[in-house]
Image (cartoon, rainbow, N blue to C red; front, side, top):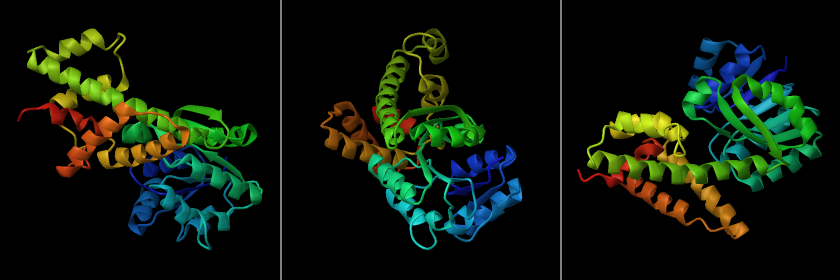
Length: 289
């Protein structure tokens, strides 16, 4: 079994690291808030370290799951960063949703040190992380990917090597673009059905196996109608991801009019103090009360 380090024990990283340990991969964790790492060790076993470098020391695979590009750089570089602790032949896997530019930067930095790198952003939300059912979209060298895929499998339902370094992050951008349109369309449909006096459960039963089927329709329609949004993927996080998408779209010359509109809607919810609500809360903007 591979020895692992996991840096970043947020709502996603905490259970992901737990799955590594449970699968038999001896895991050392680091988290900026020490109490979180202590709680993880108490629950899952394994060990904790005082710095990212100490966590990564001697590990075969080092996983990151932090907030954004700057957060990744803060735990990768410097005397306390993971690169200072990793050994040649080890592989760095970044599960953070970050820019493709950062992925390429990390690919070059690890190659210079004879280490492997895979950008592997994830989808599936907190429930997917807790249940070990995440979708992992990867960019990297095929041989490096083949070496680390069995480790990632501990918390994944689907793992796909899309292409070279950076292509995992670009694929996550595609994923977020899709989600924006899906949630807005579902919000409008549910609000329409509510105003028409339809039995929502019967409507969902009728359409959930047809052309309009989606994960959001199956997993969020009830909570959207019940106005329950204190769960799931927060608006704050989605807008961070959309910012990455828009930066890349400008570089590519891509037009994203629907995504831009949905981003504005999320901004309205943030302005009302709902930045921690689930992304499915777009439906609230359609209500009259």
